[in-house]
Length: 452
Ligand code: 5AD
Image (cartoon, rainbow, N blue to C red; front, top):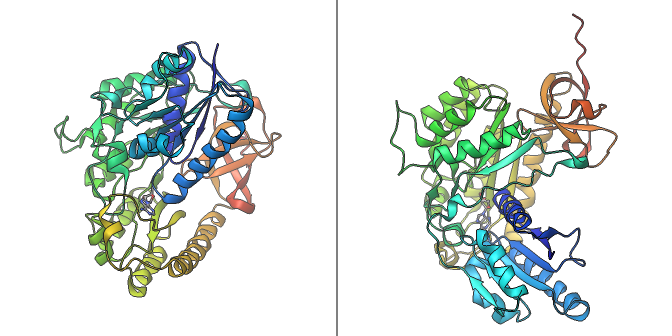
């Protein structure tokens, strides 16, 4: 039985793709190797969103080649995912020891490719063509929870690709145009997961709020995405629904209203803003203004006052002035995010922004990045501390990864809480009193004792 090790870089979509490929390989008779050294096949599932992510995967492959070609000359080495899609054959030209390059629409063919390579029927494979229907091929789950128990949470991929064409972003070329799965297909997958003990499902896509736009007409003013939320929400035994990532333009009244109507839809939203300057937002091709964005946060907080809001911000987009940057700083102050991922602008191949004049020098980007991150962390710490003394609801996922003696649960707004518990608490929805906020944004709680 040949064994495979998959290492994943990048976003939750990549994690999900790796899990599905692993599950598909297991179904075809492959084993999952515990580490790279013992594996017959090593696949790196790659990210292209910033140059750093690509360099990390290339460095890793060089490293693997160095070890593998000495000790394991027959080990198969491959790239898959976004960088595989965008670079294709060029990866083998650069690293001739690489055997396999699997693009983002060919994940489900991985077993076929490996069968051919292992049997010596083919020498090298580069598979990056588009394939109709591939958005429906990421369905299988391993559900490997911790301590040998099944997982409590699962990710479900609902669509692939992106039509937004933000001027900084490589994703439309790595993931292709938007293609959605059908609502019945997604609901069937979710139902099966719940049947296997899953309590929380996160719906995944590059822009989930654009789900099914061309396939499903509005019904009573509800978009296809809200129709999908309604359908998933109806599944008996499911406790919580999350999704990531939405686009601000997807927050119509139907979605805001869904938060009021659907109790399983948790108080949590990751809404990428990218910049606080209308001038920059326009050049980025984001399709909203600062005011519109802040208005969305206000509406969500009106429906769910405890909502945990997080975002993505890029600093140093071409032409960003100190004045533009100050508008991002003041947006952070006004929005009061629980957390934000602050990224340094990275020019990407064939994107309009890479060819724009006024690229910002690295030292300016570094300095703005540090200033914004400090502000984001200060606000984030205040947002955490507010939980101390409060009662929260957590879904218990299993033992804490850092300290196995403690159990770990997540609040509805996505915060990690540790408490003294044991395996009988696993997969339970519990109420905890938050007693303190520790380092690295971890909350500590005590179970609420009911005296009735
Ligand atoms: N440079 C820096 N950050 C980027 N992102 C996307 N493209 C780039 C780029 N070229 C960020 C955006 C996006 C997140 C996933 O990555 O903030 O929301």
